[in-house]
Image (cartoon, rainbow, N blue to C red; front, side, top):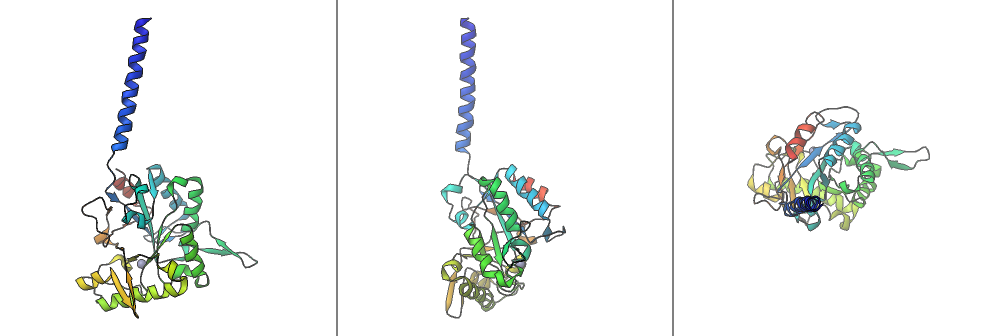
Length: 286
Ligand SMILES: [Zn+2]
């Protein structure tokens, strides 16, 4: 009887020690120094380099969530906000403000509603059943494109901001900036910001704190590159907190502010297709 009791105490002690060790290890787990920025273009019926189907996009979200990822605001990542510091963050980035990213369907009576198969619709639906995943995403917008329905351009931008998503200045002209001069940076990104200011109002437009270069390219001219951090147009100056790149040269995982290599003015992105998604997921899941 005494031996049985002793065995029981030893067993309970072992369980407690294991539990405590796991807890301590979990508490002491070092914060992640890398952060993947996943880049999408279209969420459409056809799979291609620039398009993922709604079905597969839902599957990507599910796989990210299963792997322990949650979405976050870029602004919070840049300032290393405490509430996300120990989380496994993924940033979802959508380029070119294509219609399939935020599409309105129109009823017979003329009222509009969000297409459940567009990127924003899918993300918001997923959030309902997976609230801990969050519903944050970066939409890199172009005035002339503006989600394909110019009539609803302002409404869609305000809607996305209200839902906690972020808008990123993708320039006024979608042109390769490799050979751009500093003046051309002003003319492209400054003109776009003037447009967003007049459309959305200064309070909402001032939430646009970063730029994403068209085609993901980086100006080779050092002064032009620096101008992306702070550009001016028609007497207005715009200070930026981040510059987002993409493409072959920047096809990698970004560093967080915890890493000595962190550079908010050079944030790379992993361009996602359905055929490379699993490979990317295994690369970023550590
Ligand atoms: Zn683009």
